[in-house]
Length: 349
Image (cartoon, rainbow, N blue to C red; front, top):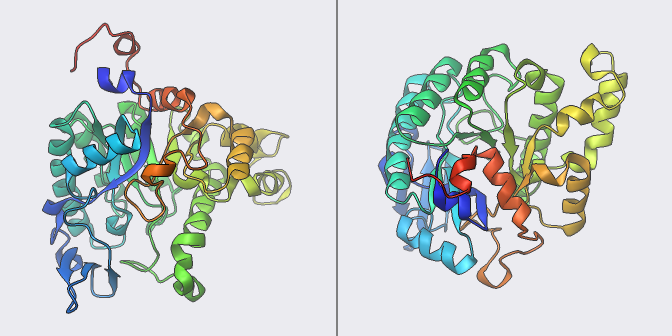
């Protein structure tokens, strides 16, 4: 990837979602839709059962790219890699609807970032319910639209270690691009989650961490990293509870009867875990320290959930995360920033 602005950026945000106007109504019966409640408050709806009330998308940094850039400047963010809105992963809808939605999304995203190459790059939306189509869309998004990878959810009709996804993972390796995995609330377009998660917004407070942890374990236990040694995957929110449960997961790999032979040796699970990447959008400094000790600080990248409910505000830009130069260097490695570009010897592609 040749991008002088990215090469020189001191703060690179890898966890930033975008809402794209062109995608409204692009998923058939699942919308999505924007509207106003009778009291004038905004809502965002997906399908017939999921409605997010009170969150302003229109006129916000989520939907207005120029406002996004101004807000980034206020927060001290030099460069941002934007990814799909988790509410619209739509991995359980009809494949044709998902394929159409992702194409519309990625076409629009490609145009947004192409017009702002000094500040933004984009991760493609993918139809995970159709793995071969997902691989094809990743290829189109990277080679034709200039996107730098893909972002998708933890849950789909098939588990993330299913052999059907090998075509997608192999394509990411062939294209030499990373994948970013982030949860979405259960039940938007697929099976409902645990009813207990409906209270106190536990689906996003605790459920997201559970989904991320399960996805990490699935990829390692399921042999995805062994089958695709060149694959780079980054997880949101520090991988959920991965740092806290790493020892137990490793013990399971060594001792439980279902564990494959490759994971039974001392340190085998840990070795594979250290191949994954994690953002630093974590809300406690000790957990961040534990994660760094567990996976290595060289596999951490800065993330904010930009403009989201839990993003750092202008007065606490760093929050619990030290915005160290090393995080930007890590992001450049993850994004395959061309070495010559970093040295200032090339011009934008």
